[in-house]
Amino acid sequence: MSKLNSETKFDYDVLVVGVGGMGSAATHHLAARGVDVLGLERYDIPHTMGSSHGVTRIIRKAYHEHPDYVPLLNRAYELWDDLEAQHDQALLHTQGSLALGRPDSETVTGAQEACQTHGLEYERLDAAQINERFSGFDLPNDFVGVYQPEGGFLWSEQCIVAQVDATHREGGTIHARERVTEWEATDESVRVSTDRDTYTAEKLVIAAGAWASKVLPELADVLQPQRQVLGWFQPAAPVKFQPESMPVYVVERNEDDLYYGFPQFHVPGVKVGKHYHLGEDVDPDEMEREPRNEDEAALREWLAHGLPTANGPPMTLSTCLYTNTPDEEFIIDHHPTYENVVVACGFSGHGFKFSSVVGEILADLAINDETDHPIDRFAADRF
Image 1 (spheres, rainbow, N blue to C red):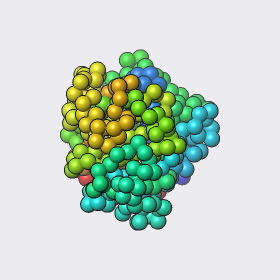
Image 2 (cartoon, helix red, strand yellow):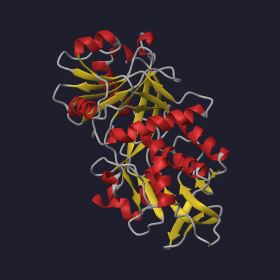
Image 3 (cartoon, rainbow, N blue to C red):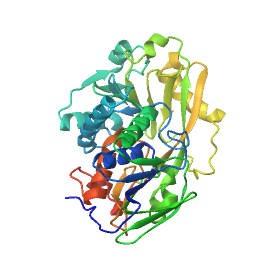
């Protein structure tokens, strides 16, 4: 039974702060359940200031981070399919994923463990097999890979558009270009003030991305925004890097030296990123947005050694943001003080693929105060 049963008159049932990947999914799932929801976003929808832009985001079931994520991924795939059926663009593109590294690397062993734990189809390939099957790669002889055919990528900006479109169809409201200035809560209600107005509701969901540490000072010590740079480079042999020819991949070159990449899609270049990039902790309101020469050099370090025919002239460089927790796992929980405030933050550079199911979880927590999804490892008090 829904816990949204107050007889007090509020402006809305639920307010959502932040309408990026997680917040847009939350507004969709809340509206779909008949909740009168308002989503508040300080920038455009979609925008290029946070963590959800850059055309593509990897989705993969061979999850080296921990096998516990796989059940959430299974549900995420179902929800992406449901959303795509309502949208006029394909959102989920599956052409396989590769987890690459030396045989004892965490990326390889963790991916294989996730596949074995959950009975996922996979192949373990040596470097020669990978280089032959996916000819854009030129891996060292001592590398191996775990290939999982259900991996692929999401068209991230279109995913947000689709979630907001679905919110509107279900009767929800979204306000873009409206910055939240403060919020307060009691046991019975919440009040959110913006640079335009003030709104009341019974419940509040905070999904503020890299700004979560500013909106949630109680969690500021465990939320660290970090500057990330993505690059797209002209390939010498474009046919090798089309979606039908190349899977998405994560590669552990050395310990703490993790790269990831995509086939060519909607940008005239092959996309690559370095996980945690240069390790620059930043304030999202003051960070340097313009990419620098050293950003490009860090990306080329992998291309030169593993994807040499993609190491051509730069087409695009773009900054985005991670928000890291100390253990690099998510926070999805009720607020430490207020049970009627739900928080989703600290996705540590691997959250977007889950946003469809995180939206469902946030709706569960806001409406019913609990969820059947396995989220114990994301508790806010674990620190």
